[in-house]
Structures are given as structure tokens and as C-alpha cells.
Length: 340
Image (tube, rainbow, N blue to C red; front, side, top):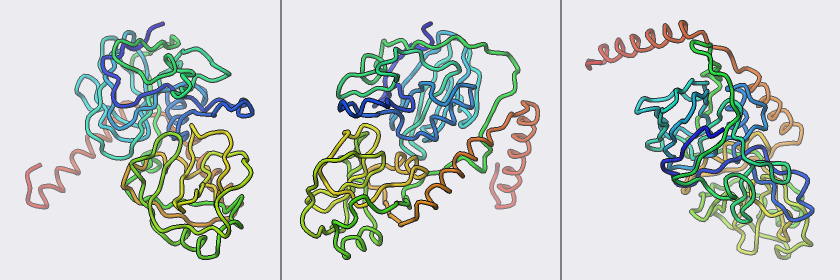
């Protein structure tokens, strides 16, 4: 069933799920969403399984017209989403009528937004995944970003008028900003770096380079010194590996990374902090702090707990909350001597 007509593809919008596993030994990258937390949250908000395919939207969003009624959720970066010109609540399920147009405005916070639709996007499975890997033209819509004229198929899902919606509690909604404190577990080749190199890595601020993409984030900052050069016998590369080539500048490898690499890896970003890095834009500041494997596992469990706290919202209670919030904001403006 054609669910959405693409009026404008935006900068880079691709169909992604949790990734293409089991084929790295053949040189096929995992791909999948860069911000797995945001995609999974979106899917849960609309009643999908975690691995349903959604749309990853980068910086400049698309314009999409719904050809059928749907229930959607927009998570991740705040790119000012609007339905027929009206602001859309994020991190919450929202019913959409046939003929409605979804568009995006200015970047407010973060880089990548995710659109989940009830039932998921029904593009073909390729090697067990619907994720798009553009360099090999695998998955998604013809293995590429969406563009004007495309029609995105979806699985028919019932839309019940007046149904209660779901949302991630406001206290748990992430904000991203432009300074990103990231936690790492050292290794697997941290012994290939000098003490000064490891110290520089853990005590310095790095800037996200403009030459960053879904393969990896290149960072600019103090040089990380090797003991005897950067080369190793190629080995596997996990999501979040911090690779340091000959120039001493770190590269954090992401979803579209190659399956193996021959440069030393000083550390690996913990899974719970990968979504934070995925929302960093060029010139943002990144710092690294060493944690133990136990700390990394604890942070991941805490992230899973946040997903489990998605709640059902009573529409009447939500409207009453909005009225109270507006009244409080107006009173605060008057107290400051301004008109609301």
C-alpha cells in the first residue's frame, strides 16, 4: 500500500531499521539508523516492533504527503516538524489524516530526526534488512535517498479516532546541544599509543569535521601519538570504534563503516552514547571520558529502562496540561513586564 508521496526529498532521507547483521564476513556493512534509541522509541510510540523500518532525516527535512490515514511519531533531532503548517508534538504518537502534508523547518536541536509510521515502511528485505546503504545501492528505495516523485509503501494499520496516544515522558526526552561528553572503553589497541597519546585523547576537546558522514565522524584536535605507527593487521570494526590513522586525528566509525580496518583503535564509544554522537553537527565539540565495561553495561540498561517508560496519554489530560502550561507562561511574561 502506498502510504506517502514524496514532494521533496530534503537533504538526505533514507529508510533505515536496526541494521543488516550476519553479512559482515562478506564485506557488507551493517548500516541501519545512526540514532538507534530515537528509531526504537519512534517504533514503540506507534506500536511497532523495534526493528520496523523508519525514515532517517538529516538536517533539511523532506515534504511528504500522506495518501492514507496513519499514526506517526517523530523523534531524534528537532527539525521543526509541521503538519499542514501546524507544529507537531515530538516523541509522541500523532494521528494523521489522508491528504495531510508533513514538512520541516529550521534545525533547532540535533542533526537526525526519525519518522516512524504504524506498521512500518514496507520496502523489500535485502539480506534480512530494509536499511539503505547508498554506496552499494542496497535496501530502502532503490538503495538511495528518497526524492520527489517516490511513493513510500507502508503496512496498513488501523487509525482509531480519539484513541489515546503514547509518549516518552518529557523528563526523558533527550536534548543534544553542541557539546558532547562521550564515554569510552579503552581498546582494543590502546597499548599501541604512547602515554601522552592516551592522555591527549582523554583530556582534549575535539571538533566534528565537515568531512563526516554515516561511515564515521572525523574529529579535529590535538594529535594522538602512536608508539610505532598506526598500522595493524586488519580486524573487525564495531559500531563506535575510535580509529586513529597516521595523522593522529581520531575517527569514530558508525553504521556504514567498513567491516574491517587496518588502523589502530584507541577506544570504543559505549553503546548508550552512540545516539548522542549521531546528533552532533560539524564544529560541535566532543570530549571523551574513560569508563569500565561495567559502567558501559549499566548505562545501556538505564537507556533500555527509559524506553520501557513510554506511557499512554489521556487526550483530555494532555489538553488540560497544555492550557495550564500556557497560562503559567503568560503569568511569567506579565511578571517580567512583558505582554504574553
